[in-house]
Length: 134
Image (cartoon, rainbow, N blue to C red; front, top):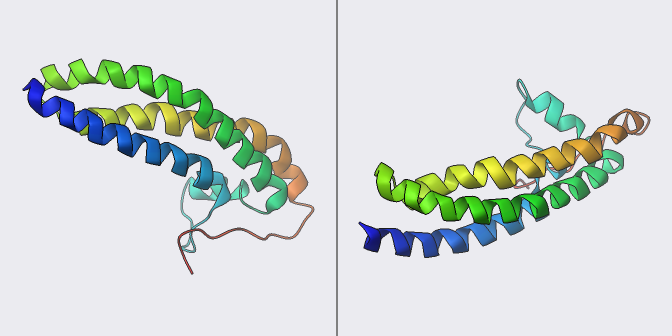
């Protein structure tokens, strides 16, 4: 069982590095889907209303990612024994670790930095950035 765990850890480590870079570059504040928002997406879209709010939110997401990455490394080390004894793969356990450390801290940082600029952004025209779409 341990021999199937180690290659998974190496692959997951590379994925984690790419995902961490993606979080910094494309964190949820700075892009919006062209699909009609529903539920909580209306609130998230406030943080991408225009550059006035998206820029500080992106900075907060970057800082949150920097805080969450070391936590993910420590938690990832703890995820290996959990995967070994739970019967789940390291990718399954590591994915949850990534979600609960890096993504959560990135969004929290964006919330902290961007919230002050949401009311100010209302004074300027809406000009969101749409990611992953032409």
